[in-house]
Image 1 (cartoon, rainbow, N blue to C red):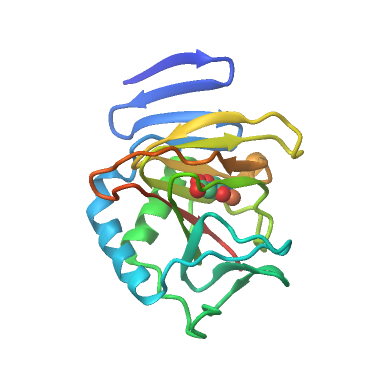
Image 2 (image 1 turned 90 degrees about the vertical axis):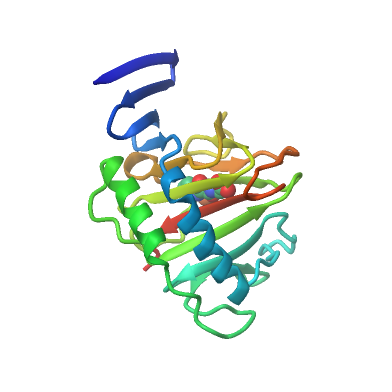
Length: 223
Ligand code: MD6
Ligand code: FE
């Protein structure tokens, strides 16, 4: 059974008995509401281990600004930035060690979410892990550092809600605002792959499992 509900000109949500809420933002970008919820325990346990080995840190942008979002990575490659630029690196610059491997629960979640959104065979080799505290934000940017732009990005939101800004192909294009809450997964690729996007300053909140934090996992095919 499929039920369609028009919420606005750009915002259509569909419910499917087997797969749950699916909301298309534009051609190539879809929100799978609460898709990660059944796996939250496994995901948070894996996250705990990763952060114990490669702690969150505030990286510096090429422009010299300390990011308000704290980051770490797992997988074969991790996204890093410093005053020399941003790149994917197979090692954590802080320790010189390889990043922790991608947990099976992460791989499975990213793969099934991508398939549900119409991107079959997605096997990420990088997972950027972002931690937001109230006030933290991510300014409008494009993700264009990956070698293969035909692969989608799968983005998992955990913890307190955030307002996701979803723009066009130019920084000036007025973005849509999409509220993302615990368990929501955004899959984004194809014609949407190079859209500008960001996160508004996080509001205060409390989540039973993550206290005052929001965690975002973005799975990519970097190499
Ligand atoms: C965040 N997400 O949600 C930041 N990038 O905290 C991203 O920058 C992002 O959610 C590419 C695709 C999906 C995303
Ligand atoms: Fe991004």
